Length: 503
Image (cartoon, rainbow, N blue to C red; front, side):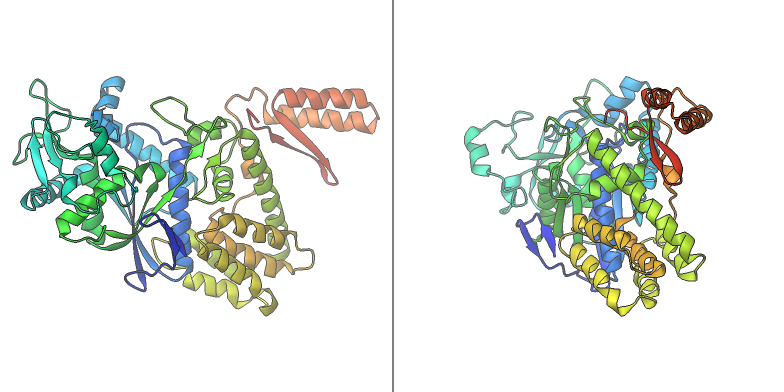
């Protein structure tokens, strides 16, 4: 069961091809670093991909790179984000695109997000976009104004169905953004002409004049090129649902002369919000990057776990306290997994389990069967619970609850528990079998104390405790805390970790 934004209903997902699912995800506009709210969309679609692979499907997944055409307002107003960034940073627009594309792909890798089958860059598809726009013109759904070619949304009877748009209300208000002559408030640019008094940084010759594509045109062209006029799932952030995806659908329908929206399922993740309930925004400057978290000592997998604690369709409030809680939870999981691995020792099935990271779109069937082969029948209920949870619209919070039960089980044999952990991690993607608890102890960029100094202070504190000099012991604990180090005394000695800055 998956929730389809197109119709706002939860229903059984049935792929067009029973064995092969085709998925398109709106990628970033590469004018700046992705903020952690942007990255939620890709953890969501990675969970979707892993679920489809768990169900035995081959998956072709396309993520586009928007390196031209996206204006500073999603509603067709303002400057091109790429050109504006190039001018501000005094670099070529191509250098801007290359730098931020590489940074985005690096972030996905650090979050253990599987690479898409196809990376699709907008500027590699300009000729296809021109041909697509010509077809729209031939269908009589576009018109030309002084600054570009516009799509007439009144020509599509179901325009706005995805966003449940009130077109009559828009018409009554009659606030038409854009140039004089725009027919409807919801009309949007398919192609934009270059200004007559200056040359754009990125522009191409077309039958209508020199210019650049509209943002909405790009995704229609690239999705249908690689996945066909009808494919299975289109994903994106909830901010795409009201404008960008409505415009994509209109283009798809007009180009194919059909009422079909292009994708059978349109799926959207909700916002990551700050404590004041405001979504992160680059234009407002209130955003954090993955590197911001790393600089504060937060491992990227901690952030992945934090995202998985909520449904992708729920607003998720970001706080440092919550992130610190996810770090403690992940560390507890990894400690338990390490003990299980030490008890089990080397095993071929453990090697097979680690091969999920090399998947490029194939199903998890072989790995899943190998892990289940040695599982006691009495424990298959945990496998069924995993399957039921992810089959219920990717319910990762419930998956985490069941995983906690497995790790806390006192009587479950180590090999059985580890097999179940490996199965669960196929979907969660937390790298539980290969990540060491010590890997989470990232040194914050602001730290002023070395690991050697921490070890020495802990040793001094241990001696003070042995001597029952509790005043000295407390003083040394406070000194470590001031330096951003938290300590915990246990039966095997004193362990330490960096405190999350801001928590």
